[in-house]
Amino acid sequence: KQEVTQIPAALSVPEGENLVLNCSFTDSAIYNLQWFRQDPGKGLTSLLLIQSSQREQTSGRLNASLDKSSGRSTLYIAASQPGDSATYLCAVRGGSQGNLIFGKGTKLSVKP
Amino acid sequence: GAGVSQSPSNKVTEKGKDVELRCDPISGHTALYWYRQSLGQGLEFLIYFQGNSAPDKSGLPSDRFSAERTGGSVSTLTIQRTQQEDSAVYLCASSLAGTGASYGYTFGSGTRLTVV
Image (tube, rainbow over all chains, first blue to last red; front, side, top):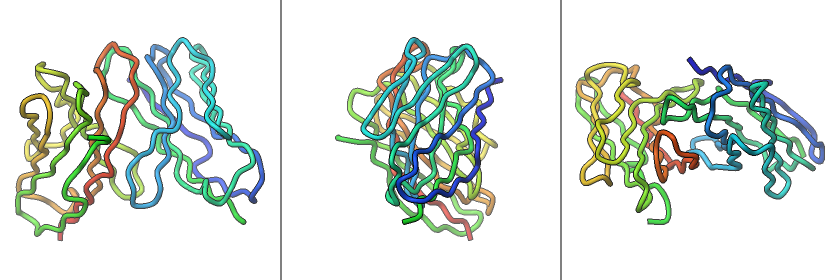
């Protein structure tokens, strides 16, 4: 059974810092991995989608990497801003299931 | 539409009542998913529809929960005889295809259900 773990559970950084969020999964047989952002009381916003054949994806200040064989992904946020404060969720889409399996998220707080 | 639409955005109901939550997926998306997010918890998979195939109901927590998808588009999640532990945000997502495909999900804004 696929399990997704996100470390740390919470992170507080000063504005301007570069930071890395970690995601690990137990079954490397995945189709893709998706990073989402969730603001308090809101739904999920897709940030980056990495296919199983890809190593990384970039969007603006965000860069997500995928090492499928080791079951790991990282989300790198450059030059963090207070507006980046949110919960970041990692999810994998497995080979035997159609649904995404989510981690519990990392709650990020960027202090001005 | 441009995105996944869910209604109502908020619902307060009395314990024991039935509720219906609605999801309008993105036009052309054949796969539709329901998830539940309880306070402080991760996202819990409930049910998955793919085209005209029988739905994957493996995540439904009890027989009080059911869902339909009419005409391969709009979906309704029904909770009968609601209990306080059903209070959560119910999120719907759609995707271009289901198992075996590499498409990402698009989520709606969710319905916040409070059972009093």
